[in-house]
Image 1: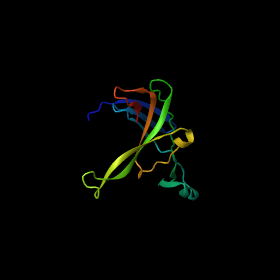
Image 2: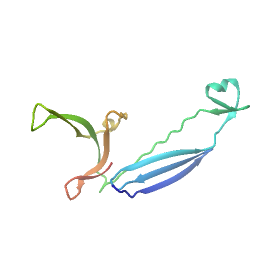
Image 3: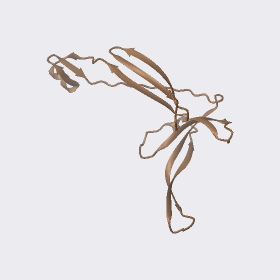
Image 4: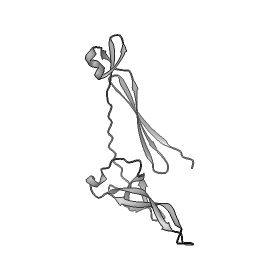
Length: 151
């Protein structure tokens, strides 16, 4: 499907780094967030004890290991503020074939899992268990009776 997107970009400069933050809004409801780190290395003077914390990049300079963390909080209001968070868990389903019950048919199945508390909404991402994350207002539906949602 062809897709036109709207990208909202912001650039932050902190010390020797520039952070490019992109939020891309797709027509199918997907919102993609991306953080790109650019900038200059912030080195320190080399001594033997520093080799545990970085690599020597010149005669008197060590490039230190460092971490960059970014946390984003999103507040989506879909037709009001009464929004829900739900996952669509994708699982493998085994069902007998109608034409021949001795033959097993495998297909993917969606299991809806409404997160009713903040504790239930916490998750560790597992690539072996695919899922979609949805935010929607249960009181706002499209012409076919489906919830309008962000994925």
